[in-house]
Image (cartoon, rainbow, N blue to C red):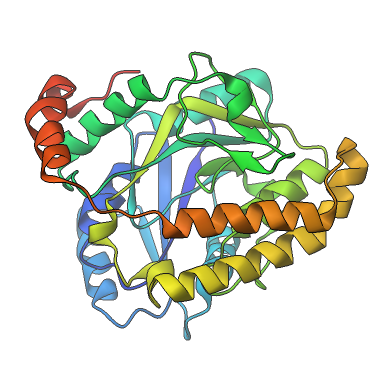
Length: 319
C-alpha cells in the first residue's frame, strides 16, 4: 500500500481544528501538513497541542497571508509520501475515505480520484454523530445517475450526489481529491487565484485532464463541510458574502478565459466563451443568493428524527 500525505491550508480557524483535523488521521495517512496562512488567531498554539497527541502532524506558517493556492504548493513541496490528499480545515472526512480512494485509484489505474462533497446545513451541529447521520441521510436522498456528477457543457456538477457504483469517470472533481505526489509536484496550483480562490482546484484538475490524466469520482468516499455557522468570516469567507461573490466571479472569469478554448478544441464543445461565462456566472450568483436560514421545523425534524434514525453504530459510517 502506498503512503499518503494530507495537505490542509488554514486561516483563522483555530476553534474548529481540534474537531476537523483528527478525522484525516486515518490508517493510510503517514503525515498531515497544516499550512497556516498567517492566521491572526491562536492557530499555531492549537496545532502544537494537536502535534503532541498526533506526532505525524507537520506545521508550516506563511510569513504573509498568501491564499490557498500558495499554501497548497507549500504542502506539495514539503510532502514526502507517494500520494497527496487535499483536505479542508473546515471539513471532516468519513472513516475509510482515504482507503477507498486508494483502492479505486490502484484497481482501475486512475491518476486522480475525488470524494463526494457535502456541506452541512445550519440545523446540523458539529457533533460527529449528527454529521455522520447527515451524511447517511443525504446519501439516501441524493442517489442519482452518474451522468449528473460532472459535465463540461454546461459546466455544472453535483458532487453531493451518491451513485451505487465503485466510481464514475468524470472530467473533473471537487477540491477533496487524492493524486500522486509526482503529478501534484508537476502541476502545482496557480497562484493567480486570490480572494476566495474559486476555481483554484478546478484549474489544477483541468490541467490534469488536458494532459490526458484519468479522473474518477468515488461516491463511497466523502468529505463534509461543517455548517456555515461555524466558519463565518474565516478562511475564504473572511471578507463576508459580498467580497466572496466579487472574488468568485473574478476567479471564474480568469479560469474560463484561460482554458475554455482549449477544452472546446479537445472535446468538441459548442458553447462560446461568452456563453459559458454567462452560464457559470449566473450559477455562482444563484448559489451566493441562496439562504442558509432554516425553520424550527427543519431543526426539530433533523435533530429529533433524522439524527436518531440514521445515527451510526459506534460512530462508524457504513458504506
